[in-house]
Structures are given as C-alpha cells and as structure tokens.
Amino acid sequence: MKERIKNNNFANYDLIKRKSHLSLEFDAGCLWSRQNVSKDVDIEKCMLDVNKEVANYDTKKLGKIKYFECTLIYNVPLIEQIKEQKRSLNKSDYHEVEITNDQQVHMLFVIMYDQKSSTLIILNDLVDYLDTVCLLSEKIDGIKKIKFVLSGLGGGFLENETDNEYIQKDLENKDWEDWILDIKSEMKKASPSINEADLDINLLKDFRKNINSNIKIEFEDLEKDELKILKENKII
Image (cartoon, rainbow, N blue to C red):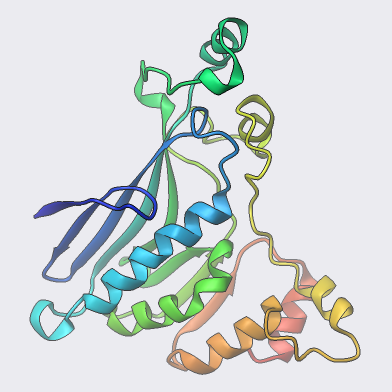
C-alpha cells in the first residue's frame, strides 16, 4: 500500500513498504521555480528519510528486501516556457510552469536494487552516506554486488544529455553538479599522509570493511590508475 509521507525537512514522498518491498519516491518540485537547486543538497535531505525507513524496515516481519528503489521526481520546463517568464516577470516572480507533456517529468534514481543481477546500484554522490548503504545491504535478499554509477536525470527530454548545461545555465541552477569520484587526485592531495577521514578513498576503505566480504564493489567510469589504487587498497 502506498502511503504519502508529509515532510517538512525536504519534500513529501510516497512510501511503499510491504513484504520484501521498500520504495521511496520524492516529489522534488520544479527545477525552475525552486531556483538554484543543488543536487547534493537534495540527496542529503532525502537520505535522512531513506536512513529512517531502512532502519525501520523489520526483516523479521516483512522478510528481506527483494525490491528497493529511491527516486527524486523533478518537473523541468521547456525552453520556451522559461523564455516567456524571463520576458514578462521579475526573477522574484518566477513560478512553477505547467507540465504539458510527460517528457517534462524527470527521475533521478538515487538507489535501485536490480534483483535480476543481484546488484545494488547507487549514485557516486552517496559516498558520504555509506553507513545507510551498508545497513540497506544487510536487509537485501541475495545481494552480490554494489555498483557506483555516474547518472543524471532520466525519463524525460533531458535523458540523453551528456552534461548539465540545460539545468545549470537555462534553468539557472549553478549549484547542480554530479559527484565524480576522483581517487587518483585525492591520493596526490593527501600525500604523504592519506589518513584524512573525509577523502573518498578512506570512506570506501571503511565501507569495504563494514559490508559483507562476499559482496563485490564495482565502479563505473573510473580511469585505470584509479581502479589500480582501489585494488591496492583492497576495495575491489
């Protein structure tokens, strides 16, 4: 059964919690009217609720999770709608545009469990929330792999965009950025000591220690030198 959760911290979300199933879908609003939306901040806020719901999921009553998904839903105006508001309104009066077709509704998949491949797929952005990912992995049935990916909005007219230019420039969200794991540069910055807790490499080392040793960790779009560093640190 779907339950609408009112949320003063960020956005209301639809929660489905039943036997072997847990999903959260956040209504993240309009990427135009909200003004200077930060992907990082939105993820930070939604992960507070994800952590709460994962912690409250009782595997003794509901069984281990076979379906898990966390998504943020954004409305994205067309360029013509933006230009019209810029022509006729002051910036303080910009408002949410009318959604005229399904291609204006976009999804950001933050976490998704692919049961077919037994893989928990998570955004690189979640490197700061690995305690929640670890807790979730303990409650998933048959998990074999956790995969870090770099991914943008999907399901709408921006799905095939290779960068965030439309979001950053046309929609004026300059703080909207993807988190790119840069293991090699971090190792250089940390030289001669790599004991800084907030470096991605150290967060990942702790993550590797805390999750089941049988779970593989995989990374998308990393350079060979970075993969070598991860292997040397026994993360992959």
